[in-house]
Amino acid sequence: MSAPLPSVLFVDDEERILRSLRMLFRGRCEILTTTSGREAVEWVRRRPVHVVVSDQRMPGMTGVEVLREVAAHSPATMRILLTGYADMDAVTASVNDGEIYRFIEKPWVAQYLVDTVEQAARVARHDFALAAARPAASAASPVDTAVAARVAVLDDEGALAAQVRELLPAAVRVEHAPDLEGTLELLADHDVAVVIARLSSADGDVADALKQLKRLRPATLAIVVSSLRDSRLLIGLINEGQVFRFLLQPAPRELLRRGLAAALERHAHLRTQSDLLQRHAVDAPRHEPVATTTGRLLQAWRRLREAAMLRIA
Image (cartoon, rainbow, N blue to C red; front, side, top):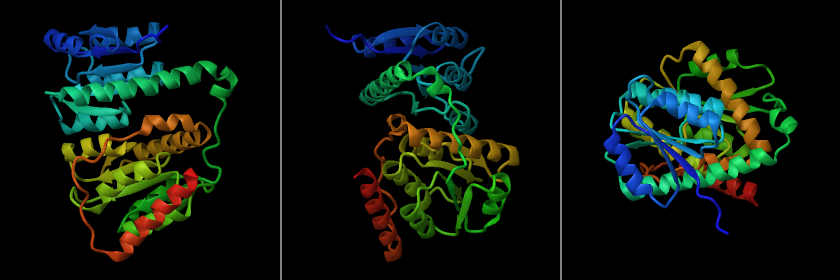
């Protein structure tokens, strides 16, 4: 007897979009559709839904609001934003509020959308099964996020590192690296829970490094602080780097504090429940990383890759 199909809920206020999605996914999953964000949240409250794929601009509730509610009611449900509007505020909110798995733009590439949803469904089915098998007391047990936690701050000026030190308890070790080479050395030598990177340019090694880092160290969470309002940059960091938070510079103190606390808690859970790392899988880069001519930087990458292989072994 074959296993039941995964359930996928598509949310879009345009019925023609829902018709196209039904045709594309017929036979691949149990298809649920609605034009209402409120109804989508009710679906998730009433029954298991493995994946929610939502439009952004809808009357009543935005897609980010829908996915935020879905995350609150069903953390194991994978969340994807599928929209024709890549405005910066929506993309930022999709990271900080919805913690989405992928940001996919309309018009979509059919095979990429199918592959992404099917991958998300596999992860969600696994996580639903884990949650069902885990004792309630174990699932609800608190995690001490400060034990041996280490945070690396990539900041050529140092002000961000000072702010992070003020916001975190003394038990968390905050390491400041003024350049990418120093950050990679820290990552090669230590189990770093969170990397906070000040991003000053869309082109260069730092953005590419954050994407590569997620493939090598999936349990390490990345928080980006930047003055750049570049939605294309952020979409790449979501899909290829699973960036955990994106804060516009200067980072509001309370938002940074909450982001750090959430990242440390997530890292602690990932260390104790390694099966959850599948949720942090990333797309292959869509372009070649910016080539660096610095021999010491290449050596730092080599050390980090070797350290990652040792952890796997």
